[in-house]
Amino acid sequence: MLTALQNARLYGIVDLGYCRADDVPAMTRALCEGGVDILQLRAKKLPAVDVEELALQMLPITRALGVPLVINDHPQVAASVGSEGVHVGQDDDAVAYARSIVGPDCFVGKSTHSLAQAIAAQEEGADYIGFGPLYATGTKPDYVPIGIHDIAEVHRLVQLPIYCIGGVNPARIDEVLHAGAQRVVVVSAFLQAPDVQESVRELKNRLLHG
Image (tube, rainbow, N blue to C red; front, top):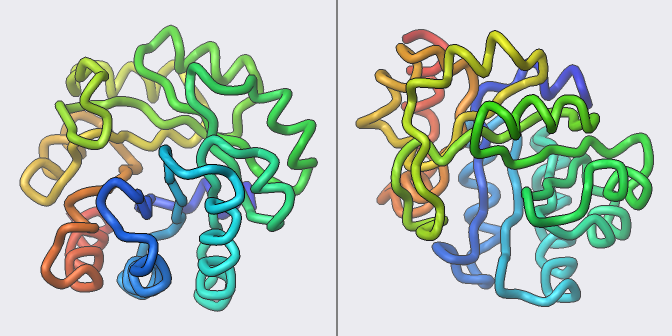
């Protein structure tokens, strides 16, 4: 799984703020078939029991297509369903606590919003970090965007896989890559695309070939 993290370039998120619960299986398949390397389930407003139910719908699809599934915010759900990863935020459980629940075979990612937080997450033992939000985003309207000027520096200071997140879309991907990003997370640009699979395929091609 850690090798998969190192090799991954494109991280997708099935966010229930943009995707209806009934559409989760179809969206999961479209994102995976389009070419996301990692897929996260993020359902901020749902109770754990509903998150678990959605995860169990997604896992057969992600497993069949070879895409690691990450559960956001809920280590207990990740442990229960046996997902490949779990993701925690700055205000959530510590990496060590999450790892104590999910065990050694599940990777743990952490959100970071500054260079200091990125360095701290590495010291804390995270397996990868999200770095952002780079731009203002409806996904997390309460977060002040950090811009793209620290992308090169965070890659110099942190040796973990770094996934740049927050407002990344096809119109911005070139400047994000030019600023030094190697991996990106795309949320609403995929979930709201007229053709999700094609949108993923096109952006993945730009990631790989410039």
